[in-house]
Image 1 (cartoon, rainbow, N blue to C red):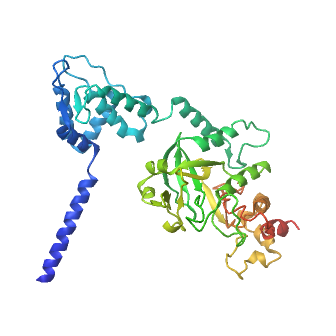
Image 2 (image 1 turned 120 degrees about the vertical axis):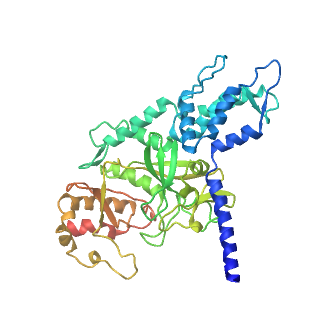
Image 3 (image 1 turned 135 degrees about the vertical axis):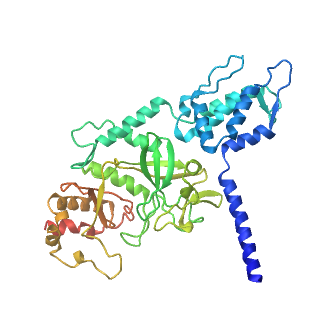
Length: 443
């Protein structure tokens, strides 16, 4: 009997917690407006002012009493078309600013309509003077003016992304190529560094921390942050630009500056197989405001600085990344390839074992390249691409090329150079084993 009583109490408490959670989950903007209307709205009774538009208030109250789905439908209608007053007073239809029509600004559209068409006849009690309404609306319009980019900025961004997309040719790589007009090259890098960030999410692929950003023009890009901008006082692991890694050619985590330098070096050598990369400093406050719930969950504060750890194989709270004193975080923005181009991953024939004293077959077999040539996916031009890539990897000090990518479905697709973060770790050492494809296949 006692066990039954304890079980009943536990179930009762669980039901109460669940009920409270559901109440919070279904708490929405419309309910908040209804609460303000019921408790915090006072009418203007000054004889020299217009009386309250009771018909408008009644319509708004009826809207609040409708079903949740119908309320959303009607609120969108209000946002797009405006309220028509049935009183004898002549009222102009509300005009929602064009820079407020983006889907992610729905909450501002709703608030704009409510404030614009309720405040002229209804005053919130926190406004001690009815004439403060005008200043409130002016301040709100100023906020809206900076809420979204202008149409010219949107057009410029879209044109730049389309230009970058036109340079992606599955049988050649990622341009612009020699002899072609590359005047837009700088524009692409500029947009990567400055375009407004519309949304931020967790990047699912890879073992290292990175974000998936949606930039102005709906262009997606990866953001690979500096591992830590804090000093060693705050965190024992810090990869500033001058940090040297002396634990081996593939030790340590990715270096964002390595991605940037590798991109420019490959382009100078005429190897157009690396997506566009540019440096950028982002505001973690802005990223958190525009992050998805699963990314937002990983934000925290450490030593007065905002940090996050994201989600990846090595992502843990104890090795998250933090902003500097101004809340900024430096990193590399990598332009994603157009969605119509699918990539196929291949295990590199010259992959390492990553274990001390354990050697891969290519490290002990002098005739290893002959066996690689017999593999269909690495025959023909691809073996030459592997040699080219090995030379670039040697120059940047990247000994971590365990997989390579090609365009899916194309036998003559070039071997791309992706994920170059494990580069420029130690400028004082040259790892000649990186050149194995060159000296095994050409000598």
